[in-house]
Length: 503
Image (tube, rainbow, N blue to C red):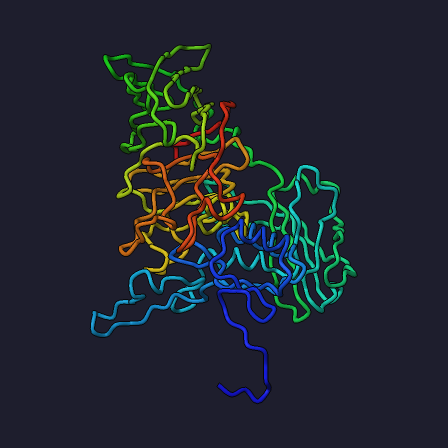
């Protein structure tokens, strides 16, 4: 080859001519190189995508370490686009050559996958440091990651918003107040605090949005923080002023409880809710609450009337312990209090129920969305009310986004839309993950299962910990702190859910 400019030759895979372009490094290799490397460092294909793995998954941990390198020059994610072509000889299917070309951040027509938004946040030239909204004092810590641009050339806007409730058809946030922010003088590489002048009652709202715009007035990113947990205890029933007396029928093997004209069936041999019968028909919610992913069996089950309430208690023991308490009060949603404990390392933890996939038509929720998340790919999603119809999208094989199945983060409430009767579940705990079904396996999935994370066997779950996802060539456990399994040491984990079957 002849180069009239006589430029230095560089290439991937190795240290060469003063550069280090390590190919496919794992997290430990990044840590070691960042601490001791002397060459200009720009690793190649350090996040090799495949289906929904790699790309944005684990990028947060990798990028944080790479920025510590004294001669960091960036890195390359493989790849930008799913390399799928239309095969006219195969009925116009999109062919990505099995698992060889489904590596993209976007689809063949630039359909944005979840990692697109994760990368957009992590690689934003304006970095917003993690902060607790509970201790918010009006300042947001920033870092200028531009190379040449002072942040006084950028603009910032804030909004305080509230959200429609579960029974409202709208998903649109209601802006209660908004404002512009005085430009901050922050040179490239500097850190500082952005000061927001908020109204005195700012914390009476439900979420804070901050949006940054570059010198070209294009949006860089919009960050969101939940301010307060959505209240779920107000009367939600349409006729709650017409309270009815609770009645029970304790037959052999089955315990029936009638509250507000809705009958709840419990299997006394397992302690599980088995179905819900409304005047309009059956809701096929069953086999729960069950401890996700571990074996346990019923040790004790009781039902009793306490004043105007009926309380059902179920205790489980085995590979983990679970205590579940159902409380039925006329005119109120059904309350489920639970706590569990486990010992060991787990891909996921929480409680689950079954609901037939063939009857699910959609979901609507207050939480982060609209895409699913993994334990090591939480960034990029926005807090709000979202709604999506059922699909069986397999990332990299089909491109109807956002995918329906998977884990969803910071869920306050979720309405499971179905062919029987929609029902809503409210969470009384922050940081709840909701499992909606289980993604289908790719037809050309690799045998290493790096990008097929573990899921509970049940169809819906309320989780405290969820699975991480790997890359084409590396398992999640090689991808850094956020990618590790949850370590439980027997501590009690508790939660509260409310079930509303009245809608």
